[in-house]
Image 1 (cartoon, one colour):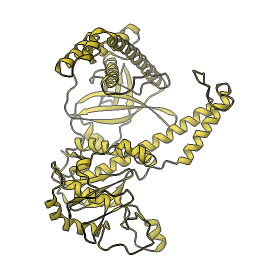
Image 2 (tube, one colour; image 1 turned 135 degrees about the vertical axis):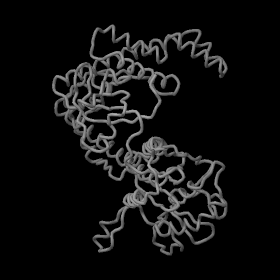
Image 3 (tube, rainbow, N blue to C red; image 1 turned 45 degrees about the vertical axis):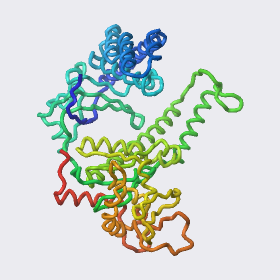
Image 4 (cartoon, rainbow, N blue to C red; image 1 turned 180 degrees about the horizontal axis):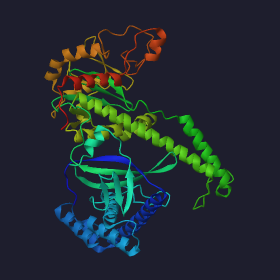
Length: 509
């Protein structure tokens, strides 16, 4: 069993020659056949188990400890456990007579099959699929640093007596991450397709905590955020604003549509017998031919989506880092991001709000910070007014929150972030909210997120907040000769630069 000590991953590209490339392709294809053979054995055992009388009797038992023990006994009987499938994968490897991968790699393939099967049996996931030749495996890893071995002296990964040279950048971070005193737990070989070309990478799992590159705030500093489909509002006692999610992601929908149409034309030209007279594809299995031009078009489309995903992940990481430098404890509403996909499909496709929240949780856990999820249904932060201690449901187009019966109007999302900042397990602390409001009002007024008089412009569109938008208007201001205003991301960077310079925050370790 692997140790549960902290660890981090260092990924470096591999420089391989033609001979090494052929070996890696054969090894990954052999791993694919082991995966398919193990999955076929597991699915057959699962079918026989569900047809057995013991399993039906256990299914009809009332829920409880005895029912769970009965199911566990049946799973051990049919070897549908992690150890059982690891043994099956290793037996398939030995029976093949091939020596492209070792026992440790086969064991991890068996663990991957068990993970997929376990999700299918207990978590409502779909039936595990076999991996085709075109799909293949994307990674193979060992259980320790004895099969796929990283040797710092050589700057290379040694696997099955093949020395795969690592391209390690000469940076301070890499020198500290791969220092001689650090223990390497295990290594993983990863295959990716970039711009139509096959590339190989090594992921080195190192014991310990990653070197500090950012100075994160302590957990005593609390920030509340209100996530939306395309942007999130944040509130701290000293900082507040609205930042965009993945601002650098450009879907280029016209380009994608053009590529999809070109792929479809190429497919129809090469497979005229697979379509009906009305242009629809014939039902049933068919043999599809793909021209070299069609393959290039498919590779272009895949590369476009890969770049979008990489850009989105980079933007999410930058925003998560900047947010954790403001507050070490992040309070956030627990939302359904699938509903975002249903109601805001295009925005969710571009921004990835759910992926950002998961990224924030992972980074907070590794940085010594924490993320607290609040019950949105109980708190109703978009409806609550601390001044009157009442709730009022607002339509989505209403982007302002009126503070009590006064003429103070606050940007709706920032108000929710303010309420999240001071929310407790028992709900809203109204006395604390009223006590902190004068300071918060001054901060929000200075940030352009709060106004102190009703709107007198009858021509303003309904639902327009009249408050500062979280977008850069530098182009318009430059044309009009006005001073340029920084965007929310630049404001966050300036805040974190000050925090790093004043030395008040501690490193994440």
